[in-house]
Length: 319
Image 1 (tube, rainbow, N blue to C red):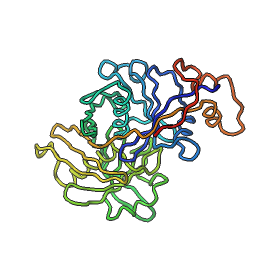
Image 2: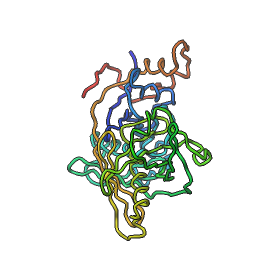
Image 3: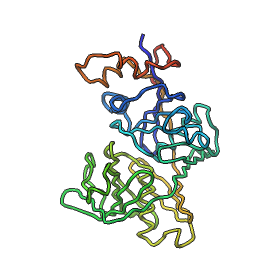
């Protein structure tokens, strides 16, 4: 019988993720497997994948194990590795709570963008300490068709180009990455946010996330937008000495972003687990290899071949 990998599905303001619990880091998830799992027609579907691993068990997180027990090994929908995902951290924390690893209150989560402080509130909202933004040199331009806009260069542990526009429809379909220049500013690609004003300290955005296309929400992107809006509006907390809060509407809901005078960013929003089930690793091996590719011994060692804790019975997705 096939070995099966447990999974869950969750979202934060409709930025959705496949969640693969793997405390001891025994499941090998190559990019091809992640891409199949995130495929909305052939797989489970998601904007990305949250690989849940104890920090001490992952080579990229062992140095953070003294600060955070759990590491969010985040992957984009195309299988590429990403530094951080703000909505993903909230969903990651909700999973840890659901699994009984943590309770309401403050917890720490290790990410490739550093250790993030997370607060799980009684009302269900999750607040993430997103760290301090970096504001590299500007001079960036993004384009869609014949239109071009200057963009604010904001780094939230991953790169963002924030453009203020008159109409969100001007962003186009966002299936493919909007062109930007100069290319050397973002050698590994960039997340691009298009922003309009709704009211004082209230904006709306659409985003192209590198490796995923347009998503319903982007937590680091919402933070980057709030930072760019505050600088545009002359509300830099480091200058005024007072925190500033922006409400950021995304296609999947609303996030509240606060920047403190010390530069720390906090993001608050919902996080929901909607389903759980099991992945058949025989299917996953075949799908990840692609049609017509024979199985190899290496395939058997990957994708569940080393899972001591895997269950070997059938199961259906539960919502």
